[in-house]
Amino acid sequence: QSALTQPASVSGSPGQSVTISCTGTSSDVGSYNLVSWYQQHSGKAPKLMIYEGDKRPSGVSNRFSGSKSGNTASLTISGLQAEDEADYYCCSYAGVSTYVFGYVFGTGTKVTVL
Amino acid sequence: QVQLVESGGGLVKPGGSLRLSCAASGFIFRDSYMNWVRQAPGKGLEWLSYISTTGASTNYADSVKGRFTISRDNGYNSLYLQMNSLRAEDTAVYYCARTNDYGNGWYSAFDIWGQGTMVSVSS
Image (cartoon, rainbow over the protein chains, first blue to last red):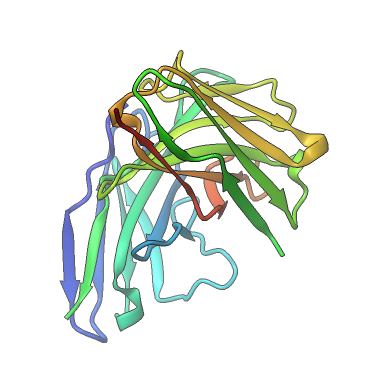
């Protein structure tokens, strides 16, 4: 399975909003509302930010929101802050058969706060 | 607290083997689907394998199928990855991670991650 496609980088000034796209296929993103998003600061483990397309785990700021249209999912960061500068990865559930599944991650996007 | 701690990484020659371990604490391990995910230096995340709560169901990415084997011991709250026939391209930080279904039966979110263990494959 090929990696989901994300832009290599996006940037914005503090207080602005940025949106990261994540394009897959009808076999993954398009078939399930099961896209998750992860934030990874340099040298650290990834952190879950969004699951099932648009749900936030407890403790994640409401400045982070997710959506999906067709084969493309999106993550929007509103009110950009310096601490948001990190790499972001999308991930989609991908069913293989009735009882077997897998996952495919995106290529990753570097968010820079100007 | 909720924690996953990987161990077993190191330097190995091409063609060699290594066994990674992941110790879980702070949550009900035996009720959790578990995974291995890796990240090559300067590259993105790559899912490798999952294992169901009892170990009855597993799956692997094509890149490691036939070479890597995932297993677990619920009595010891531990997850393992046996890696054989290692190649230079297997050089990466290896993370264990839990997938959560948030009660709906779809294990789609990696909600707990370890700090990772580095595996280097080089002659």
